[in-house]
Every structure is written in structure tokens, then in C-alpha cells.
Image 1 (spheres, helix red, strand yellow):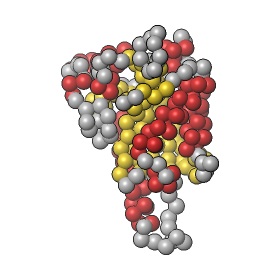
Image 2 (spheres, one colour):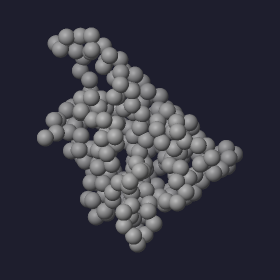
Image 3 (tube, one colour):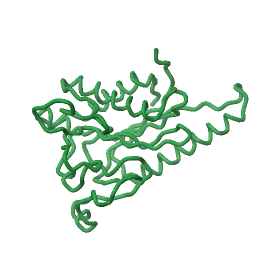
Image 4 (cartoon, one colour):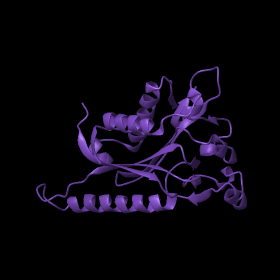
Length: 238
């Protein structure tokens, strides 16, 4: 049985990547500070720690994780400017990925110790949120051996393996930041300028592409938020 906890949900709308990263870092440090202070206090004195989930859309941007190679960015910085896209090296795991309009980017800031989760189990649960969401749209998706994220045709023949949701996280003292990028109405042309997540032999897709028409973005956000609540057992305060 999943124990329900309180958490804060924020939909930031369309927001610059660096502005959002700074906001995440502030929340992350605040959660770390509370956690460390609570270790020195008696149970009755401890401050309440609220887990958070941020939703955001970003203007066109490519981000490269700690273990990634800049060789997976296939255009130079002048060409990036022509595409109205930015590029940042960041402190999450994983390789290179793209964020842009029409994509649900989710940044959970959770204390995994409260949930009794390892980092691997946490990523598994994020994948489950997206798999359940796609099921509501009649799409069968799954994990793929040796690769994080959510994939279509990852274990079946008859089509190219394609990623619909990328995941890259950072954790310190079991508190998380960064998260997932779920393609809804995303302009997939922007993935042509990178080797997504370092792969050269796998495709990228979106909910709109799989269903053959643009999707209700706000409806998709509501479904993801609902499934996140159910998988993690969090009651959202907005």
C-alpha cells in the first residue's frame, strides 16, 4: 500500500530554461537545508518537508548531462542561433536531449528516503507514470533494457524503436531534481540536430505523431499529474 503524502504542484507555463534551473536549484537547496537541520532536531521540532512537482514548457533548448559528449550535438552554435535554440551543459545524468514547446517537462523534487526508494526505483516509477498515461491514449509503451525513458516498439518487431519520453535526474542526499521530458505536440525536427540521449540507431516520437493529430496539451498535463499522484502517493497542493 502506498502511503499518501502532501506535495506542492506548480505549472510554470512557458519559461526560460536557465530561469527554471535557478528556481529548481533554490528549491533543491532549501529542501537539503531542511533535511539536514531536521537531523539535529527532536521529532516535535522538525520542520515540515514538502515534496514538489514542477511542470514547464521551455523555448527551444538542448541540454547535455554530465556523462554526455558534445559530439552528439550535430550543429554548431551559429546554426543553433538560426534555429532560435540554446545549449547548456548541466548537472543531471544522461547525455544530450532537446526541450521545446509542446513538450511536458516535469521536474520532481522529492526526498526519496521518505518514499523508501533507490534512484533506480525512482526512475522506474517515473517511467510507470508515462506508461500509464500512454495507456489511457490506447498506446502500448514500455521500458527498454539498458536504456532509461519510455519507448514504443522497444520489445516488438514491425516498427522502429522510438523514444517518447526522456529521463535525466540528479540526486543529493536522496533529494532529486531535473526529471522527464514527454513529447506531446513537440516539433520533432529539432531532434534531427542531435543524437538523442547519445543514440544513433533509435527514433524519437510524440503523442501527436503516434495518434496522427495534435493533442489537447492541457488534458495531457492533467493525466500525467493524476498518474504521478497515483504512482507516488502524493496529494497535490497547488
